[in-house]
Image 1 (cartoon, rainbow, N blue to C red):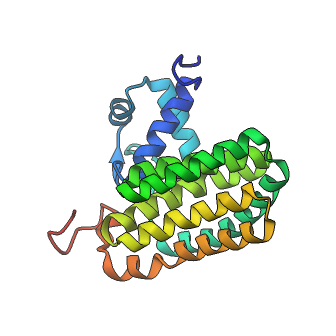
Image 2 (cartoon, rainbow, N blue to C red):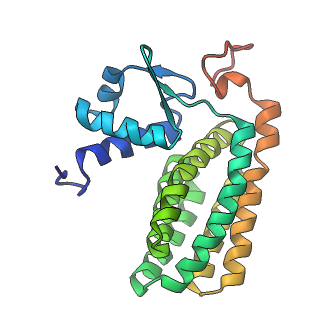
Length: 238
């Protein structure tokens, strides 16, 4: 059954809502949730939430624990740094295909996304940035038109949206917001111009930007922020 407002099925809508909660740390890494908890959070029934849980489990964003409910997968910096290298290669492949395949309508959407991203930089609204980043990822994957790559990259995008949101919430600066936005804009502009070399270079720089987050996250944030089952050492849990 499709929802009238979005064209999404109930299961797809449950997935989107849970994915957003995970990416914005509203479902905290390492937290256990019951089915009832998740249904209440997304305001949908048991069947669509079960469908979403299965998909998010496949994406390694949720873990189903028999007798304990569902656990939000903790942030493992070592694992995610390895995954970034996988993402690096896939993203460069995607921008190349997007340049080859992008229609006039897709290019028009890219112009408007670049404009919206610049406006987000002024407001420094990281939730809005994440939504635009998600739109950009989907637009590039649609232009790429390769289902295998989409299935591989979709969970990676969420993993790094969550990591980026954590970084910006605790360690980010005006400069880091500026650099992040500009790197996304440069990729869009290069694709619009059908400049493959510049698009790949901008993509590599974005991956480098994300790689630079790992050292300060590891050194400066309490382990509690990566897994709430770990008892905090201080009272600063903002």
